Image (cartoon, rainbow, N blue to C red):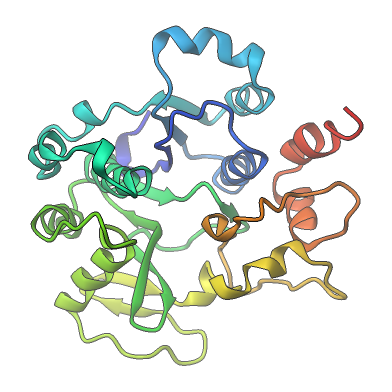
Length: 286
């Protein structure tokens, strides 16, 4: 399934087995935009004994597994980290002592998956709206600062190997983002002199495209609530390939409400209509 570095890869590192409407929308929107590519969702909570019950128990799980180019696999970190620099770190680290373990294990897993299989990694709060036209890329969150919420490389690309080595050498689980965006930014800065973005032009660094913040972060994280507001005129996001909804900021558990006419409701209707009908409209009055 995952040969040729063409997969779109999602990861769930909690033991949570029921995809939320936002996770479902992320995966569904990717299947629609990349309909000729495998969309692969790795779930840590999945094992052979849980699999059989899931389709009947969770609406979102059965909805996603019914899509023809969606493949759902267990995330087995011990196996995944074999033959990578991450394995000794994984054996040594005490997950119960790690404050940000869900995020750190996700940061590690996405690197190993792209190293082994290649393709495009996306966070599960990213809604795809048009195809990304490049293969080797990092996404800028701001000038001179890379995110790790979406990136793409062919398998066995040296940049990802360097990221895994750096992950272990400079490991610090206490600092939020140290193993993720801070790591990606540090590796990129080691290669190139990063400058501020001008207009909506992407940058390039040693054959790696560094994509303008407008491509995935047209609404920056301090303004994340804008997605949950009603807009007089919806933005067209003409310069974007996907929209990152900053779910880790959403401590208020804002959700999509049918008929609210919020920006996010309209995005669901357009880019993940099956999720919208089944998980948003379908739950009204239940």
